[in-house]
Length: 356
Ligand code: IPT
Image 1: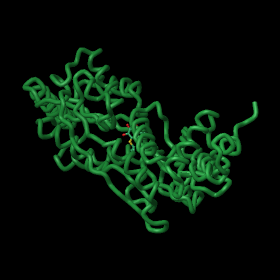
Image 2: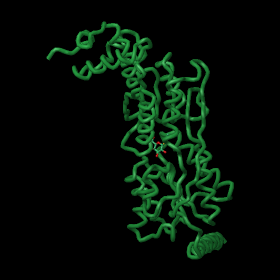
Image 3: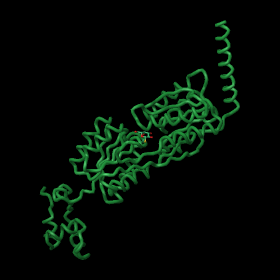
Image 4: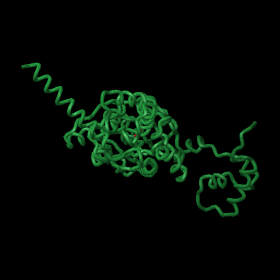
C-alpha cells in the first residue's frame, strides 16, 4: 500500500502543502478553521507524521534517551516509569536502552545518539571514570547520571546514601538493638558501598561491630539466601539492616521459614520504599528514596539542561518510613545478649587459664 503523504492531506483539505506542514509543527499563523480542516483530512486518511522526515529537516526531536540497569528490579523500573510519564506530559518521547553491565553503556550511548536523542539520563551504577567517558562520548548532548558518587564531576541527581544508612542504623539503635547484622548490595555498585560504609560508621559511633555481614545482588532471591546465612550462626542478630527492599523481602521469607518472628525476634529495615513495600508482611520499615520525584526532576533537567558546561549536581534527601518490621528490643533478645556476653567472658577466662 502506498504511504499517505503531506500532499494527499493537502489535496483532501484543499490547502497548500506548507499549511499542512505548519499545522503538524504547531506553527503560528494558522486559523482555527484551517487547522480543523487539515486535522480532519489527516484523520480521514489515517495520516501519521513521519518523525524521521522531521529529523532530516533539522527539527528538534524532543526525544530523550534512558540507559538503565535491569528493569526487572523494582527501583530502576519505578524510575523509568516516572521518566516516561513526565516526558509524555511534556510532549517528549523516551527511548530506553537496558544494559547488563557498565561496559555496554558506550554502545548504548552510540545507539541512542544515532536515533537523535536530545539528552540522555543514565541509571546504571558507574565509577567516576566510566561516567566521565560516557559524558565525553555523548558531548555536546547533555548526560545526567543517577547512580554515581555525589563527588563525581559529571551532571548528577543522586539520593543521599550516607544519610539513608544513618537513618536506618539510628532507628535500630534507638529501639535498643545491639546485635545488628548487615546485608549489603553488590560490591560493584557505588550506592551499595556508600550504604554499607554509612552503616558501619553509625555502628562504630555507637561502639558496636556488625553481628554478621553478607552481600547480595539486590534480588529477593539473594536476600533469601544471604538471610538464611545471617540466621544460621550460633546467636541470632537482634536486627538486620538490608540495602534494599527486595532483599528485605527475601530475608523476611527466610525468617518465616525458620519460625523467627519479625519484629518479635528480629527487626528488619529496608532501603528504597518501592511501591510494594507497604504490602510486605509485616509492612516494611524502610528508607524512602522518592523515585517518582527523581524521575520527574531528571526529565525537567533533560529538557532544559541548566548549562552546557557547568556541572549540575543535586543530592536528594531520603526519609525513614517506620512501619511494622521493626520493634523495641525485647527482654528475650536482651537475655540472649547477656548470655552471649557471659559466654564470651567465659571463653576469655578459659583461654587465660589454659595459658597459665
Ligand atoms: C538502587 C536501589 O536502591 C536498589 O534497590 C537497586 O534496585 C539498584 O538501584 C539497582 O541498580 S537506586 C539507585 C538510583 C542508586
